[in-house]
Image (cartoon, rainbow, N blue to C red; front, side, top):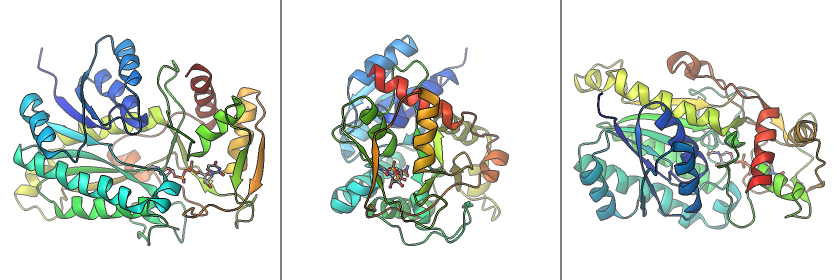
Length: 345
Ligand code: WQD
């Protein structure tokens, strides 16, 4: 029985991080979680224990804490890092940009310094389709030129990608997420927005649950078929499985050796769009939710939200071919799982 590889999961009690912890374990890895509980709760660890059958290693702390991070590497010798820990609300970043630059950019640099000091040279990085800004054409390919980010959140992800590309001693699988939604089918873990949700689906499910009075659709006058913005919604379990595919590649592709030998055709930094390849408008999502759950959504169309792009969805050819991964769960499943989680949490 070969020893399991330790994988450090920053933000591992968060929405995507917690689902990825389950998939890592399923794939034979040993997840080591660090989380500052800024956007998650310790109860998620209890739920993970229930689902895993053991309590994963958890350290409460911040990626900006260099001493803590160095200590984690010395104690657990992770062979790779999945870096989720970051603030991620587009609207919030417009109101509080410095908090986003401190956490998302300085935090990454601190983590990379510790990785280098401890000779850990493999990372899966949580990036975002927001790096494309308002794309001129959709669907977006990885080669689609990035444009000025529409929000400080998107700018922090653009900066992070530049830092990771230049930091060429570290082999990086950079995953550009589209819109993660849904929850684990057991409804024991899911999206836990603390306070008023910034994102569409938690606000929608909280409205249907009676926690919020009404959902406001931010803008009905965009140049789309029904006037509302279009996004590529992806089930969080599909997204979690994509992270395992990326980790597997880091340990099987031998690319870093070619990079170190100076092979010009191999890059230590690989980027993938992690979406379904299908775009849905806000109104289409509301209709899909009502059809999938039999519930009615109380909403009205209001003003546009600062930082929003009109339409973005993924071209997924590269990730399908290189990682052998594609999304398997449809919008109806995303809506059912999101609603089951809301009823359960
Ligand atoms: C989706 C659509 C809103 C709330 C997210 C993540 C970000 C990144 C990209 C990973 C938009 C509309 C929303 C509401 C609404 N993912 N909306 N009423 O802004 O696309 O960004 O995906 O990195 O981290 O935040 O997602 O869910 O906020 O908005 O009408 O109450 O829903 O205008 O068109 P967004 P979102």
